[in-house]
Image (tube, rainbow, N blue to C red; front, side, top):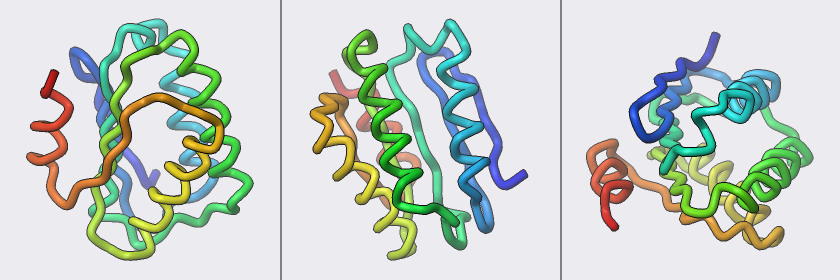
Length: 125
């Protein structure tokens, strides 16, 4: 498995590694939404520092953006913190954010180079 999920008190932290497949990204997201606690969460941290690449078709990024945008109707204040340093991983995260904005997802989204920056941001009011 190319990812690990950590359920935290107020959010979720995903640590992705290696070559991440479409199935793994979709499975991790569907697991989040199938958990009733997710409705009360304030953040998602998507850590891609150890990712070599995402093996994703653009249509999967669009599907993820649509899924999240539909949940944004009831989950008003979620923050998504993306962590990456490799240009190809950053590009994947930026593409997802672009699709989300096209769907008028109002969640706050930002990418960082370090986990401590992401955690600081998610704890800001």
